[in-house]
Length: 278
Image (cartoon, rainbow, N blue to C red; front, side, top):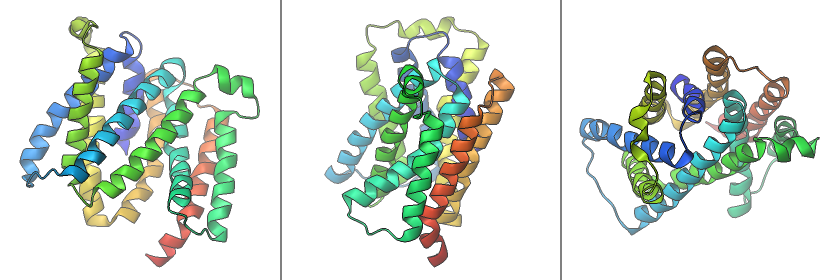
């Protein structure tokens, strides 16, 4: 959770110097390379079929869309604010999508959770003042939350067909190829003219903030169970806010903190039935 939280600060640093298409390509390229030793360590048989390929391609498109939206949001907004909005609001949106798509019947606690989550979203996104929402970076952060909800749903169902580590590696590989084709006419080698701070942020985001953090999460899920492991996600916004404050000296906005706390409470109510039955 600490590694994931720090990734938002690293992305903010990367947005300061180079265009989006260059950053997106190198992020996925470094991420793909860093997965190679992980794949060697696990030594799990690599199996791909039509079903798994559909999930990989769909998730690759969504991951690119998420990276683009988060880049634009953090470029014009705060890294800490973006992390809180996306991390806390996305589970609520995910639950709404699942309830609609699979026609799940909701209980009273889940309705309460959705109501609290919507209030939290209004507070975080400043929807009480539509001009602030439309003119700020919150539109990109909201799009990130929606896109990540799709990634979450696809990831959950993909585990029937492909190992999570292989799934993550293939997503990064496909995203690398797609982003390279898009950025082919850009100055991709301009990254080598950047300084130490840029490369620390790039390596952190591609290796520690993604590959290593994701691998740890998968290992923890196997040992602790997905329900208990997922509860640690509440620490991501805290670490993101702290890292943005320490490294970037970003202000901790009151509406982000209050809205984030409400969204965390919403996720608790939404999952309270599962927790009781676990």
